[in-house]
Image 1 (cartoon, helix red, strand yellow):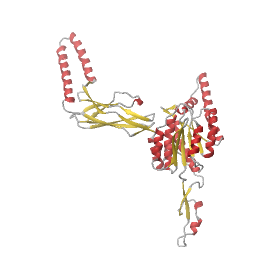
Image 2: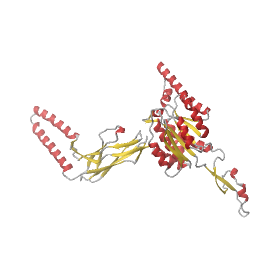
Image 3: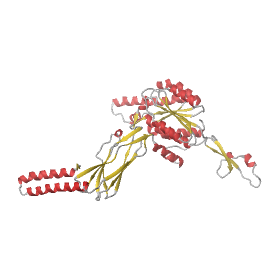
Image 4: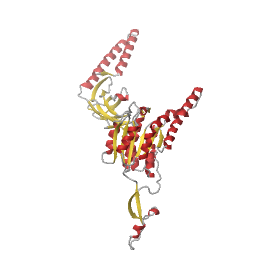
Length: 441
């Protein structure tokens, strides 16, 4: 049993009235009657909540897999077996990772009816999250006493890479609406696609695709031009290499750079599977820790999702030598390799450049680098003091260093993509589709 705020306010009013009764004696009988009335109402409220056989049940509905970095909706259902309309204060003990505490949400529940409420959680770490109890504090229309019900015990929810983002991109790709999220339509250069079939010519077909031999074989009674049709090259290996070193622990919007890279990798690899290519993954720090060979078999997406779920950034510098050894041993066919990493200085890049050049000799390598958004904000701010001028000058030199890293990679035959964490997914998918359209794996 818990007292609500109403009886305390009533007691405060009675105390003031008793004080006033010492000054004006005729007020005392009225105050005494009010005190007895308050006690009677509390007893009546207890009878309504405990003596009528009423109860409250409910449940928490959590998605089987929570999506990293996205708002995930959690629904709570409350059912009442009371014969009167009650007020329910719902307190859900969310996982400690969210650090959310509050006095709950009050919802009205009709007599022998039910009520629903929903709230959203945005997880910023992958892993298992434990919920506590689901508590409901029920008050009658009198609102003097509350009765607590534990309607659900603790439960577990698993946070995976951004499944919502992956599904959104997949839906837009299937409905040819990827331009809505910034993915550009790439113009294809010549016939860089695989032969599909020969079919009759229809107005609008490219005349350069006319198959004159097939046209000549048509009978005189059925003269009609025949054209070759093509489809995108399929079964090409696409591999995302994820750096799990200390540089990828840098935070952005509550998540690490690795988490942003994991979300982008899931979307990119799913896009590759949808376009008929083989998708694979290599995650490494001092050694390769998550390797999924490129394939497009049934269950490949689940294998990639499970491997991405288990990744965790380390505290040491990564070994690009080990990455080169893994790619050389596992990838026999020339592949598109998108390496998501973060170099801060040209000197740091030059130490790893020999291994990147070796990878680029055997595969189409694109290194994805992260632009420092904090530096970008400094460059756009107004310098009002001499100290601000020095800070902006330092920020400009760091920004130039990043651009020089990208230029150095390009000079040595390695593709470079300099982007921000919020633009990572769109820019990576754009680069993949551009390379696929050019047929330059």
